[in-house]
Length: 361
Image (cartoon, helix red, strand yellow):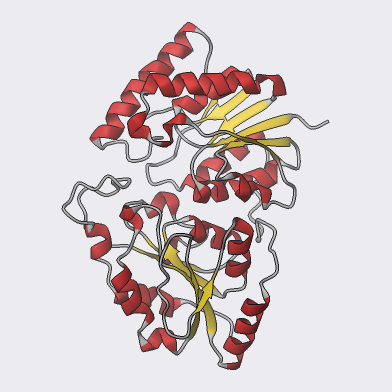
């Protein structure tokens, strides 16, 4: 019987995708359990070997409305509820004492993660991040001294610029397992009939299919829609690419002439569309990471986030970014009078990256 491994991933969809190589690699030697938000669970259900999924919405989803003590109390409660699973190992790739406490309360024999140090904590120098880190770090230290260590195996990032996926590789090394990066990372549903027909037409015109996702969940990641329309109207785009436009629910499509409008009501539908494309253009977002998981070239427009940490796997050199804002990365708490990081990116910058793509005929 394989030992039980609890993987804690309480962030968003794209972050869940970045954990998949570790999940796949560790499944060879462990029975995998994942604690994640309900909205993220469909990502893990796309795996060929679906893990045991424990859905939980942490109260700190809106961090401005959740105090440190409330968050720690909630983490303690869910950890105690999971104690009955008798995990041999619990792991988390984020420097987050709330997850450290959660792991400790499961009483897993091995608890592997990243203490909330300055070098481990993303964007640690901004005032609201520093205050939170110091407060929770103090609580973390008090727990360790009064009771027992939250972590039995503490890991540390080699540099502040270390990619987030490297953290999962460090955890894999501590467990003596290997991350499985062989693409695709998830199951690939077949495209719909209309997409198949669009593919045939595009091949007849000797064009590559470019999947475009022009919307972002957070304003600090949303490149202006007017610039999207300028870019996709350029002859260098219209003569080389056939566009599949992915529009999430509640958003207005760009409706560019000749583009195919794709409905993606769930993760499986989005996976099918991305897999049917030759390349993907989007923001720093879930579609970027999912496309990378399918082995697709991804051109990613970065705003408030840091590509050194969060660029899609194997696509760091295709990032479009202008490092002009003195407050970057602000994690969508913009301190300027406008989104300088995004407004400074021009269609020509994105076009340059698209023209560098080497795709099959």
